[in-house]
Structure formats: structure tokens, C-alpha cells
Amino acid sequence: MIDVPENKIAFISHPKASMHQMPFPKPHLESFENPLRYQMAERYLEKKGILNQTVRLRAPRANTKDILLVHSPYLVDSVEILSNIGTGQLGESAYASPDLFQTALLAVGGAMKGTDVVLSGNVKHAFVFMRPPGHHATTSDPAGLCYFNNVAIATKHVMQNERVHRVSIVDFDDHHGNGTSEIFYTNPNVQYISFHEYDYENFGLGHYTEVGYGEGKGTNINIPLVETSPDTSYKTAIKRVLEPALNAFKPQLIMVSAGYDAHYADPVGNMDVDSRTYWEFGDSIRRMVQSLNALGSVWVLEGGYNPFALGPSIEASLDGLAGRQRPALEDQVERESNPLILESNDEIIDKVLETVTPYWAKKKTS
Image (cartoon, rainbow, N blue to C red; front, side, top):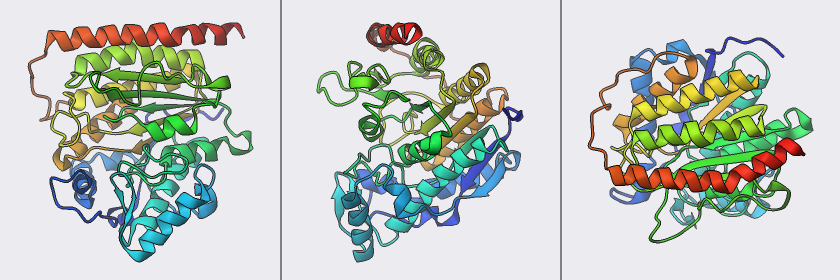
């Protein structure tokens, strides 16, 4: 294995990532996934000098053959056709624009480039700063601002020709990545771990009893936290679930669906974390890559819809990933913590562990 400094990070972007825009005014959900969040976050990272500490790379454009590694021909054709028309609904909260198809191909290409550059040994980690997001896109359906599942396609790409045999996907977006979960639900070689907000009064997808199917049982791990969960709950889940799960699975590569809409200032999510939690994720992934002797990690942007909060959140992740101390940022204000929320989440984490740890034991004995 090539020895690469653990703090060497590629930052992959493209000027045309800001082209696609859905035709909705605020406060429509669709209006928040817009070029402004991308442009302001990039401007913040440049102004702070964060990007000067990375290896800057430009995302290439994927082709249709790459998309078909995961998605149905019907989905691919639908996205291209409605993009050519210039408008139209592709799924729930998923609308076309004249620039959608080309922008989505660049987002996939960026994710694939991330895996390639990490496998080349030139960097240890890659952050793919592209849009639109992807983790809600299933095999056949765009949904939730997502069209092509960038992380899933990059994972299939990197596992082609047996370049990598085991991949873990860590998803900390505020919302459950139902698309990624569906795509790999029966795959024993891909572990999916999702931290997300969950409504225990109106049950939906992302419950902790969804563990995978057939040979994939035990590889799907949901950590469904209650609304307004604070930094403390996320840190607990990282220590008690994420790190032991990665240790049990022993991935050769860690993919990260990096969604920042759990931030307390986000207009879409309902959680109560700040950039300290995103530093924790970066620090944890860095340490796990090192302890597992893995090839590295590839981070792919998902949500994060407050253009003022996205930049600092990414900065904190990159600092953790680079092994730098947690930065003191303006969003890190003291907020009242509800003991009942902490207690509820501790109970949920206990149930998650009761559900998934038996599969870890089976893996050790098999």
C-alpha cells in the first residue's frame, strides 16, 4: 500500500456545478437547493484559505454508461428528456431545468474522480464539492432534490474489476438516504450507516430495524435520532455505533454522504448541531481510515441549505479530516439542551446496537 500523508486532501469542484436551478421561489423546499448555497460556501472556503490547504481538482463529466452502473435506462432517459425540454417534474421534490442533465453528470463525474484519486495513492481523502445531491435517488426514481445517486455510482465504479472489495458509506445528512439504502440493501460488500432525523409519531423509512436483506443482512445500519437532536447525541452515536460498525466491517474505502442540513440554522432540517459535530465526523473518519489501514475516504456533498452555515460546516469537516484541532467558529454558540432528547437518543442508540451487533458477531465467526 502506498504511504500517503493522512492530511493530504483533494477538493474536487467545477464552475458549472452552479448551473442547475429549480424554478421555485422561497419558501418552497426545492428553492433551497440552489446555486447560491454552492457559491457562498465556495467563496467562504476560498476567503478563509481553506482551499489552499487542499489539492484542487476539476470534476470531469460522467457518461451514460457510468449512470447505468446503478440506475435504470428509463431514469437516465427521463432526466435527459426533461432537461432538453427545460422543465418538468421527475419525482417528488425533483424538477428539471435546462442545465440539470449536464450538471448532474458533472456531480457523478466528481464523485468518481474522488474515488480514482484516492485509489491512485496521490491523496488520502477527497471532498467532492458538487451539486445536485444524490442520496434520495433510487434505482429507478429521482426524488428529494436528487437525480443520480452520486455516492452509489462512485461506489459501484470503484468496486468494478475488484479494485476494492468492501466499502462503507457513512451518511450524516439530516434526511435518511433511502436511495443509497435501497441500492445496496442486499449487497454484503457495501455497508451503509445513516445518521438522520426521524419522526417517531409518523413512522417512515430509515427505522433501525431496516438491516438489509439476504446476504446483505446486517450491512444496513440506521441511527434514527429524534428531532432537535444536539451535538452530544451525534458524538455519542459516532463513538458507540459508527466506529464499532466500521471496525466490524473493515472497509477498504469509506464513502461519505456529507449532508450539512442537520445544522441548527438550516431552513430544511430540524436538528440542533453546529460545526463542532462536523469536525467530529471528519476526525472520526480520519482516525478510522488510519486504524483500519484503509485506502482513504471520499466525501460527497449532499444537503446543507443555509448558505451562511455550509461553508463553516465544511471547514470544520476538512479540519477534522486533516488532523487539525477543532476550529472555533461563529456558529458554535451555546444552546439549551433538553435532557429528554438526550435520554431518548441514548435509548435509540441502545436499540440500534441491540439490533445490529449480533450481525457483527456472526461476521467475526464466519
